[in-house]
Image 1 (tube, one colour):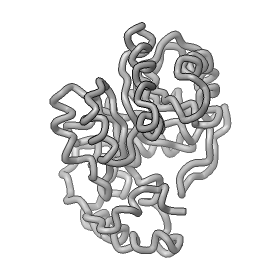
Image 2 (tube, rainbow, N blue to C red; image 1 turned 30 degrees about the horizontal axis):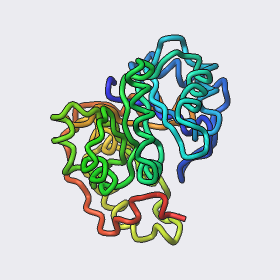
Image 3 (spheres, rainbow, N blue to C red; image 1 turned 180 degrees about the vertical axis):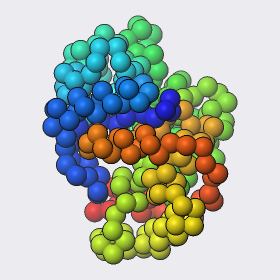
Length: 275
C-alpha cells in the first residue's frame, strides 16, 4: 500500500470522463479514514482543485498524511499562495510543493527561486514540477534547476516518460505518476466513446482481451502495472467514494507484468486534447 497516493482533485472539482460526481464532506471523511486504515500515507492536492484544500483541512485526521500541493497559474505570489495553502490545510509545512503549470516556469524561470526558498526555510521537504510532456522535462534538465519530486502521466497506454525514469530514480528524484486509469477512460463503455476518442477503441478492446485472458480486472492490470515499476515511488489514484477506494485497495497484488499496448495516436493520450 505504501506506493499509493490519494489524489484529491475529485474532492474539489468534477473531474474525469467517468466521474460519478464530487463526494460530500461526510464521504471525504470516510474516504480519508479508510485510506489511513489501508496504509496510504500521502495525499496529492492543489490550490487549483476548487475547495479541495479546505476540505482536507477540515477532514484530515491530524498527522495522518503527508501532503503534496501545487502552485497554480495566476497573479498571487508564490509565498502568499503557499501560506494560504498551509492555512487551508491547517498545517505548518508540506511534504511536497510542485509547480502546477509548467508554462509559468517557461515564462518566468525566476519563480523557481521563490519555491527553492520555501524548501530552504524548512516549510516544505521536497519541491518539483507537475509535467505533461517529455519536452518539459528536457527543458528543466537542460536548465539545471534543482528538484526532488516529479509528477507526470504514466499508464499501460502512455509511457512517454519511461526513457527518463531509471536515470531520475538513480539520482534520487521521487517519481509520482498520475493517470493510472487514463482519467477513467479505461472503464468507459467501449460503444459509447465520444467521436474524438473513437481511435482509442481498438486499444481498449485489446485491454479487454488481456483482462479476459489473464482473469484480471482492468483495474488490477492498470494499477499493478504502475505499482510494480521499481522506478515509481508514488501511484496516484482518485476516487469519488469509499467503495472505489476499497476496490483499489483490494486490487493490489503481485502479478506478472503484461506487455504494454502501443498507442499510435499519442496526442489522444493527453486529456487536454479530448474536447
